[in-house]
Amino acid sequence: MEWNGSSLGNINRPQSGMSWSVAAEGRVVIQWPAKASPVFELIKLKGQYQVVFSEFVDFVFLPQKFRKKIKVQVDPVNRHWMQL
Image (cartoon, rainbow, N blue to C red; front, side, top):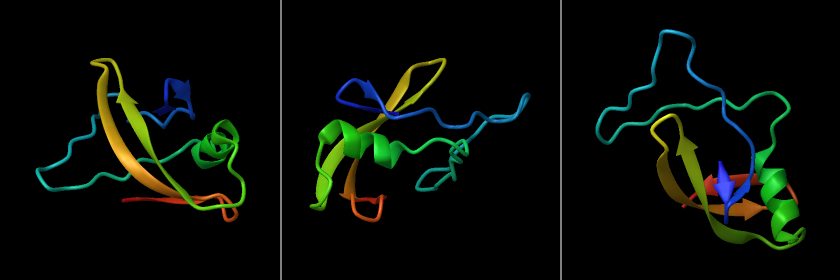
């Protein structure tokens, strides 16, 4: 996951021999490693600790280097974000 070319952390990979697939108009739950905090990394990089803000972040899926840009609203006080 990236913001303006800076890494926000890595997501877990599918188990060996398995792959993720998403049906049209569907969703897939992506788990984060226990020590990862992409929200906190974005807050640190942005330097905005008190006011709710919106940003675009890139999910980068390897090995095909597929990118998906999403807009998120970030609540830095509660270290929470949601997709807009």
